[in-house]
Image 1: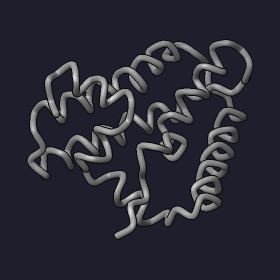
Image 2 (image 1 turned 90 degrees about the horizontal axis):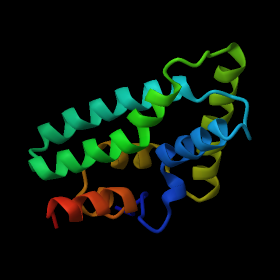
Image 3 (image 1 turned 90 degrees about the vertical axis):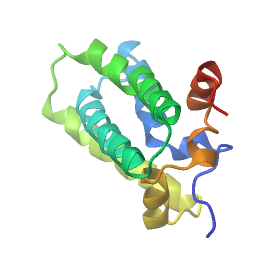
Image 4 (image 1 turned 30 degrees about the vertical axis):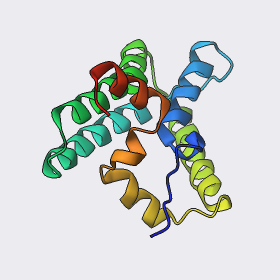
Length: 142
């Protein structure tokens, strides 16, 4: 099967898109609050952890995933916790997700295969991204 996710293309990962959105929001470049999508992303990460446990991934593998998600999802959510969300923020989320999916299609990604690959723990996939790779090195996981 042709791999849909590649470490050479971090732009395929929605988490990085919302992290950039968070940075743009806190620097007041973008007025739309990404807090609700972080809530969804954290719930999705918990779902992924359950899948990793089902796949009997190593403790270090799961810990690296958890630490990476704390850095790119939980901490930004913490900074946004007391911020107000308005209806326009949800419209912005819809637009970002639409543009993200369109970006995947424009780059010839099969959306179904992509998401199936994304939720299935892969040693080569997850460990190849900068944040997770760095944490894995710190934990001594190869």
